[in-house]
Amino acid sequence: MAELKTRQNNASVAAFIAAIEDQEQRSDAHKIATMMRAASGREGDRPIVGFSPRKQNISIYFTRLDNVDQAVLRKLVDWSIQYVRRKYSTRK
Image 1 (tube, one colour):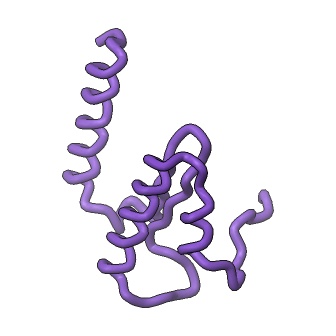
Image 2 (tube, rainbow, N blue to C red):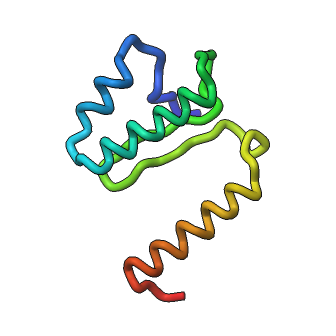
């Protein structure tokens, strides 16, 4: 099995987000972190859901599909596909 890259540390989430170069992505990451903080309000041994602002996109992770409202996830996937097709005039 591959070794986990994410490990517990004392790094500041706010400082990490503030260091994101792209202004729009930094704003998006701040909004997601705020949503997650409001929904949880506490810490645990591992996250139920997490995100990673990467160069090209923001990736959202969850531990199990059972932890997600699958109807909402389906709507999000459908909306995302439609949005990208409209924005970039991709094939249908």
